Structures are given as structure tokens and as C-alpha cells.
Image 1 (spheres, rainbow, N blue to C red):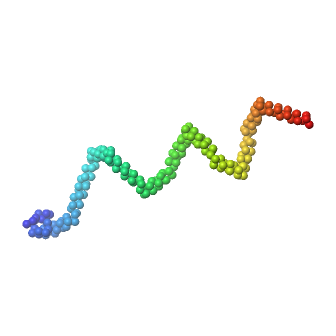
Image 2 (image 1 turned 90 degrees about the horizontal axis):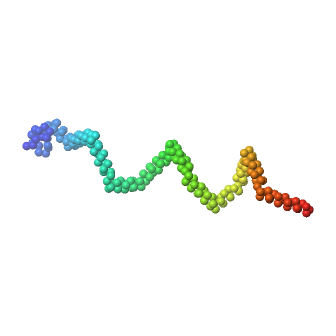
Image 3 (image 1 turned 60 degrees about the vertical axis):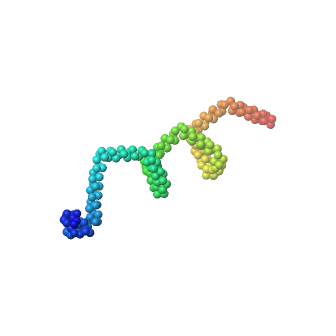
Length: 207
């Protein structure tokens, strides 16, 4: 004779684990559906959660995780996964979208402009830029493009207008007079003027 596992009363039913009592029959049904087993798992989960909240357990887990992440095989697996993950189309699309949005932020633009200003003021950068511009200006295609641009009527008109306006500035007029005065005092200029004067005088006498 077997005993009911729920109430402990004897039972003659060899096919069931409980007696004929209604309460025991409901208990057997719940056990068959897994409700009692699930309650046991919930209790175990609560117990594990309380255990994992202890400070010493958290410290021990952090220390283990730190040591685990330093293992060569773990680093190799992580690098391999990252390499494979970055090749996925959805990751590339997400990275491009984030980069586009990041570059539009005002603080990022200001930081980039500030860095560019500081970078352009470096002596080695200025020297490199001058060297590049000097080499670029000697290219035949650049010279041809400049000549073609200078022959445009609107460019010629703009240059004449700018030269006229620049010549009318008081400081440029004063500078021109000073240069002319200094130029006329040069010995080679005086010698050329005397030679031209003597040649013209001789021509007039021959007439």
C-alpha cells in the first residue's frame, strides 16, 4: 500500500501518487503542470539575488572578471569578434549615421575650428603649406588656367577698377611720390637721363 505524498494517508491507487481527496488531487495536478517546481526556482532565484548583492561577493566577481579579461585567449576572442562585428552592414550604417550626427553638434564644430586654427599657426605647417603652394603654382595646368582666367573681360574690368581705386588712396600716392623721388636720385637713372639728353641735343644740332 502506498501513501499519499501530499497528506500521508494510505491509498490503493497504484497509478497515482495521491489519495482520492479533492485537495490532494488538485495538488497532484499543480505538480504535474510544473507550478510547484517553478515556485522552487523562484525561491532559488531570490536566494541567489540576495547572495549576489553582498559587497564581498560583488568585489570577488569584479576581481574575477578583471583577471578573466586579461587572459590572452579572451582578448583574442574579443578582437576577432570586434573585427567580424565591424564588418556587418548594419554596424557600418549605424556608425556612419552616428558620425554624421556627431559632426553636426555645435561643440564639436567649435572644437574642430579651434584645433584647425591652432594647427594652421604651427611653423612647420606654414612652411609645408608655402612649399606646396609654390610647387602647385609651377604646374603647367595651373598656369594655363590662370592665363585663361585673366583674359576674361569681367576679370580685366575688375582689375582696372581695383588698380584705380588703390591708386587713389592717400597712403599709396605718398608712397609712389617717395619712391619716384628716391628713384630719380639713383646714379644709373641720372646717367641714363644725361645720355638721353646729350643724344637729343646732338640730333637737334644736326637738324
